[in-house]
Length: 199
Image (cartoon, rainbow, N blue to C red; front, side):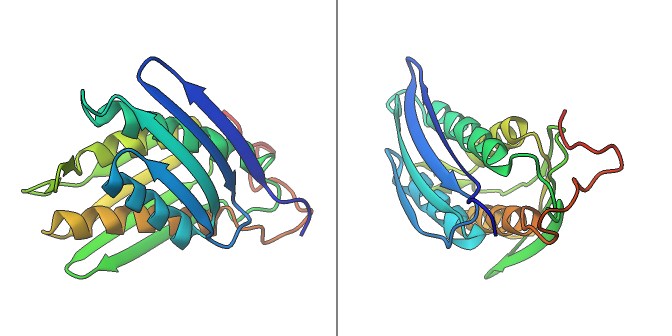
């Protein structure tokens, strides 16, 4: 394998301050700190199961709402993923993952297409995990897919427990991205008849 595919991205607004370094050729080593403990846990799951090395620090105006920090973290991670992928030569490009978490079953399908699109079909009757509303996961996935410039389909096939559901979603995202970004043809072409995977 050649040089590791990694990127460092920072973003600071009046609402949030986020710094991250992402290595998609890692082993799942992570150091994550956000001011939302359960969100920190979800990002750790993403890194571990995607086998990404991730350093991330995120703080923001959580006294207003968790929305800004969750969405902006999706922006930063998506941008880092896109930059780390580089030209995408020889990658697998596609992946579909079904991932169970007890009674929950999630499906995540990804195409590292260079085109930003999200289909998100997840409904849970009681979406709260402590103070974290898992409906915010949709904002993360949307921001991530847009800034990573990928096509992403996220579906909850079944599940009742909000904790199990959102953990399954983040694990499945990590696994799917890890598979799709795998280099199966070192030095090969971009996997597209167009010769490019950019928007």
